[in-house]
Image 1 (cartoon, rainbow, N blue to C red):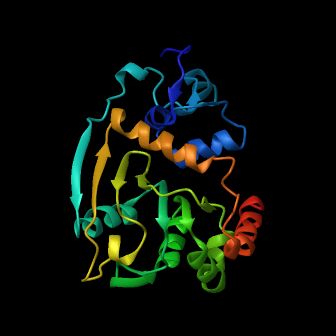
Image 2 (image 1 turned 180 degrees about the vertical axis):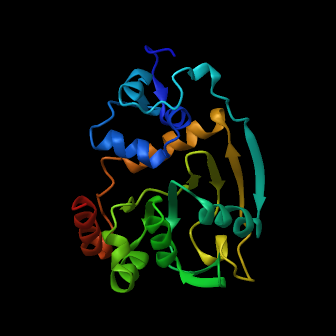
Length: 251
C-alpha cells in the first residue's frame, strides 16, 4: 500500500468498508487525521487508516481499487420524479441539495404497508433517522423552515439535517451518496420533481463516475462553505434569516 499518497474519502470507504458518513464522523471528531484540499474535498493518508485498524485487508492497495465508469443520462420532464426523486429515497449515507426554491410539498414513498404520503420535511426526517446526512442550501428556504419548525421540529434539531440560506444560490444540484449527481433545472417543488399531473418542463443530466462526480462535489462545497452564506439583504426576510442563522450555528 502506498503510504505517502493522499487518498479521497471515496477510496477510504472502499478500503475500510465504512460508510461515507462514518469516515466523515472520524474526521470531524479528530480520530482520523485528514486535510481539506481547496478543490477536491478531504484527503487522507492510508497509513492513518491502517494505524486505526480500519483497513479490511492489509494487502489492499489504492491501485487495486476498481474505478467506476463515467456515466451520463439525460433526464426530461416526468423522469425527474422517476429518476431524480427516486434516488433521493434510495440514498444510504448522504444527500446534498442546492436549490433556488424549496417547497414543503407532499411526496409519496414505498413502504411495507404500501405507498405512504408524507410532507417533504417528514421524508427528510425518515432519511436522517436512517443515518443519512442531509444538507440543503437554498435561496428561498423560509416557507419550508417555518412549516418544519411548527410541524416537525425534531428534524431541525437532528444534527444530521443541515439547512443553510444563500440568497445568491440559483443552481439546482443533487448529489446522492457522493457517487451520482443530478445537474439541471429542477427545484425542490412538486411541479419539478413531484408527482403533479400538470408539471413543469424540466431538463437535466444524471452523472456518475470518478471523473464526472468531482466537479459537482467541489461546486457544492464551495457554495456550502461560502463565508457570505448568512448575509441577508432581503429586508422582509431579515428576521427569519437571523433565526435560521442562529439555529444553524447552535448545532
